[in-house]
Amino acid sequence: HTYNPVDMFTVKRLSESDGGAPTSAQGSILDTLPPEIQHLIFRYASDDKPTILACSLVSSSWRDMSLPHLFSSLKVKRSSSHDDFNDFLAVHPHLARYVHELELGYLPMHFPGLPHTTIRPTLTPVKLSAITTKLPRLQALVLRSIWLADGANAEGDSTAHPFVIPRKLKRLTINECSVRRDRPLPLRVLFSILTAYPAREILLLFLSLDCEVPFLPNIQRASVAAQSANTLEVESLVV
Image (tube, rainbow, N blue to C red; front, top):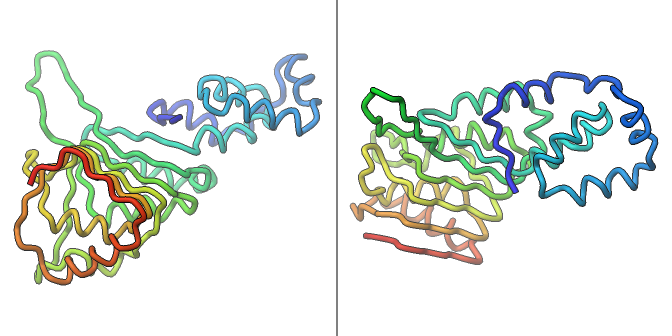
């Protein structure tokens, strides 16, 4: 149920071209179908991303109908940074408004003859906010196998950053995340994420936590955020 915009050539073609005129008699015939029938076709194939992608190349009208299905759910995996995805959203806001579900993850890179790197993308609430504020219809966020940081200020208060406005979600999932060098995730970092993204359903999966004593306001804000959740699911939590 996801479309991974790793093939940037395809994304660039979809976002910048005008779709062109139908290139065959078949394309012309498809465009003459009643709109209700065309929408039924896309609804039927909505879970089949390769089919939707192929349909988007039929004509300009079919491209326009395909975009909400192609970009409704995205998995964005990077080896070191998600900055290019943030830049992509800034350049293509018309595509960003289709995104309802987003997963930010880690893409391992192995090069023959070179030592294996353990560096992973690092996200703070500020960097996350820079991405999610460009997604006005975002409902679910997944953070998977990446490094998280809080960007704490001098007083240790990581949740009072003036540029982070809490964003309510239906579902927040934090799966196998840690801090740099895969150390246990400090509670203050987890609290800063929970505060920035209060969600009705929170899933904490395969986390190792460092139970240092967090800054008191962090606890208070995270408690308020957690109280808004209808579901809190925890699996394989090591403290």
